Image 1 (cartoon, rainbow, N blue to C red):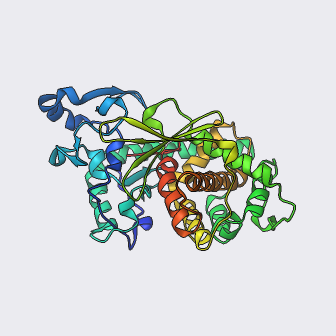
Image 2: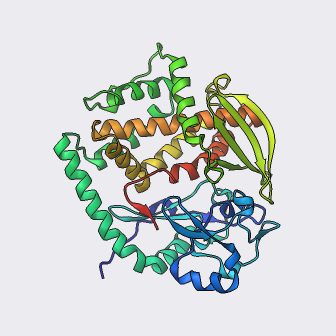
Length: 371
């Protein structure tokens, strides 16, 4: 059996807690693995449903087909000792790409202020338990990456991922300044590869264009007819806020513990513009961009986009453009939260926007897969 060393660098020095009021992970419909099936078929057959996303599988039912897991009562799991592997693993994501890496879902509030559970130690236990499943997936994934790089070479769009990521790491300020972000977007759409060193502050930035680009990115990521795919934001009071986009219309609602949706407010998306970053907001944003830049799942997401668009864009342009669009999506969500809830765009406001955004970022299609 092939072996591997997992990358735990995202977890070093971090601690996590599970807040009993949260229940955020219980909004994610867990798949039932073959070795878990007998327990649920014997003891809770009514709780099993067939799910289609991302592929056909058996999962636990949700309240009213859209709320929390049916085993969640008063924000407590009634089958905690027998909960599925998915539930045991959250908020860790084991990504299998060219290598195995473990990432943390920053939509879990316990990741931000945890003190009890050492994240790296816990992740190593999870990886060891999943090792027999990871090995064959890693073999297939490495072959997929080899095929991807070969396609890039044939199309003349190959780049060196390490160099591309290094250039972002030393240019974080360019991705937190709207004038330079706008320029990166423009250059990323050209056929010729460009260098981030070319990007300078521009007093002639078209902010209307930037607003529209940010709004489009965010609304596209929030537009869905599937209630299970609606973006959820768990606020400081542990409310499950959901946001539904339809054209220019935006609805804010709260999902309760019984799966009922309670309307809070409407807004016209075109009336929400990017708010300027307040004190501390730029630093928190730069830290998040740095994290995305190190994630293997983010690199795999860029590669997935390149494949989906027929290898038209050079790898560096695709990567810089994806970082820029991700930042714009996040900043517009921060502006939207500020519009509805007055969260601001300082350090705390950007933190809240990351809590809203990161689960969706991790769910983006990627070459490679989560185990």
